[in-house]
Structures are given as C-alpha cells and as structure tokens.
Length: 330
Image (tube, rainbow, N blue to C red; front, side, top):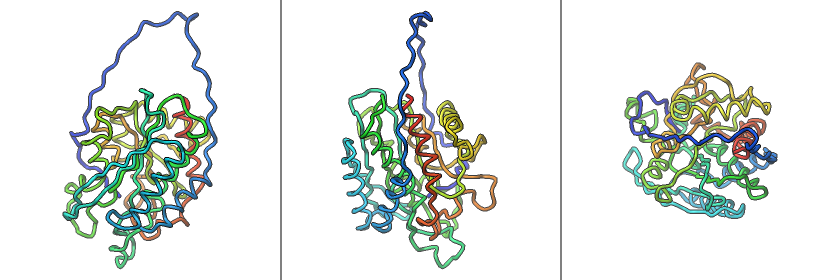
C-alpha cells in the first residue's frame, strides 16, 4: 500500500491566506443552526466491502478491476452523485502502463464551499509482507487496505442522498495507490516514495475541474481492522493541524476516543500527501502504530489474510460516524 515517509516532500508545500471581518455585536450574532447527523450504518458499510471483494482482485488492467469500477460508478450515481470517471494512465515502478481510473462523485456541485473525502479502491498485487515468503507474489483481497475506506465512503454517500449536509461534498476513489515497488526487490525505501499513490499523483497534476478547491480533505485508509487505533499522522499535523484536532475532538465527544487516540503517529506516504500538494489541507485517518512491533501497520497489511474475516463493524462505525458528524456540523 505505502511505506513510511522518511524525507520531507517539498512538493507538498502550499500557501494559504486568511482574512478578517468586522465582528458583529453580540446582540447581532446568529447562532449556528443545529443539524441532525444521520446514523452511520456499519452493516451497510461491511456489505459494501464484501461486494468489492466479490469482484476479485482489484488490480489495474484486469477484468475484476474494470467490473469493480463499473459497480462503484453505478452505486455512487444511485446515491444521487454527479460522477466523473477520470482516466489516469500512469506508469508503475516496473514500467508497466496502468490504465487507472479515478472515480469522482460530487454532491451539490454548485455549492462553493466543499469538503473532499477520499480513499483508494485498488488492491495490492503482492502479499509482500506475508510471513510466508511463498505468498509474496500473490495478490491480496485488500478488505481493509482499500476496501474499508471505500465501504465507509459508499455508506456516507448513501446517507448524503437521504439527508444532505449544508456544504458540498466530493468523494474521490483514487486508483493505483497500492502498486508500489514490492519489498522483495530489496531497494532503498527512499527510492520508493513516488511509486505509490499513482492515481492521486495524477489527479494532483490534472484535477477533474480546473482550479478545483475544497475547504479540506479527509483520507480513509485501513479503517476497518480489529483493535484499530488512529494516531495523529505526521503530515496531517504538518499541513492540516486544525482539521486533525477537529476530527479527533469530535471522535472523543461522541464516544470513539478509544479509536482516535491523542498521540502523534508516523509520517505515511499516502494519497493525502499529493492532495496536500494540490493545495487542499488533508488528513489521513489510518491504522498505523509506529511504536508497535513489526512495521507498525495493520496486522494483516499486505498479506493474504487481509480478508473479510478480519474486518470489524465496530471500527467501521467509529470512523464513519465520526466523519459524518464532522461534515454535517460544517
């Protein structure tokens, strides 16, 4: 999926401006209207993950990949979104041309104030972190690594179709995130950073709408594992600290503080880096524990055991309800 980022990527620098307005007298201040936050359905999200797995390995240039793309497009349209399929031809670490497809769904596209929610929908062609080296060149189901983020976003899309938030929402499912250089090639980690997240790299250079902007972005990656915890990822804190705090504070307030832990995590090469490079401050919600034994990722990361049996509905609920509470209170 991705590796620990060990260098600062200068490409992700961006500038933002602020403006001040004359404060209103207390007597003229308007209270922000309260909003009812829909209830996130974790069983629905779970079924959306299963549906992706049922198509087979979601590896670019395969029939299963093409069929999954058609399903995701139709499902987002069914939930009332305007959907754009962005062809994203990208070159893999080994020179293979991948016919990537970024799937972009917009709700209330005429609204200027927008939030971007995103995940990757492809699955890894290599179980290169599997304890059994005989599995290293086998593909993985990617139930958590890819499938869980998409499942949560599809359920959020379903809820938006029922009751819209006050702002516009864009959901982007990035392709070719998980085709990075496999660890069995034994190359230095510093050489590998840009072999990951190819779909978001393409989108950052070729946005689906010229000049596209969003208030902020939230990436969901590996958000369905058992015993998951989400630390405050390093680059998220660097580029979007106020959004990180908003999300983690919201999770604590609504009862999910045991998932969104108040500690700093490592820096991850992931789709949010390149969305940040496009000028949209973005946060990565990812199950990564840098102080744990092993590589710090989800227990079944890049192994043949990243399957539905290891998806936890409670984790899906914690993430989905937290993200919905954030966006519905904007």
